[in-house]
Length: 73
View 1 (cartoon, rainbow, N blue to C red):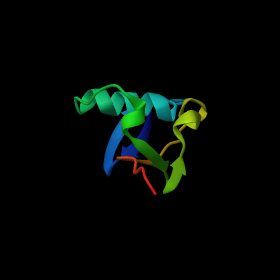
View 2 (view 1 turned 90 degrees about the vertical axis):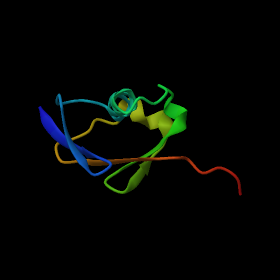
View 3 (view 1 turned 45 degrees about the vertical axis):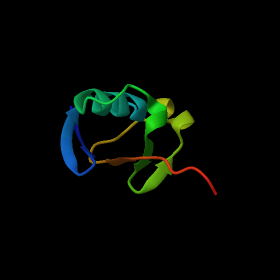
View 4 (view 1 turned 30 degrees about the vertical axis):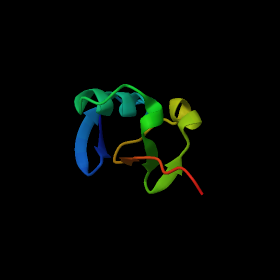
């Protein structure tokens, strides 16, 4: 197990977990719709596009932030 901080809170996950799996677990835990398009993500303060989440393997002590995407221009 590894510790990953999600929105400021430590959580335990199996090693080799992907960012998309963490987002899904977080959405389940917070009773949100299981829709990855509803959140934008950053790991260690670097934006990670939705298309890259399934390939993004998290490491111990990574900090994941989720936030509402901003659209428009």
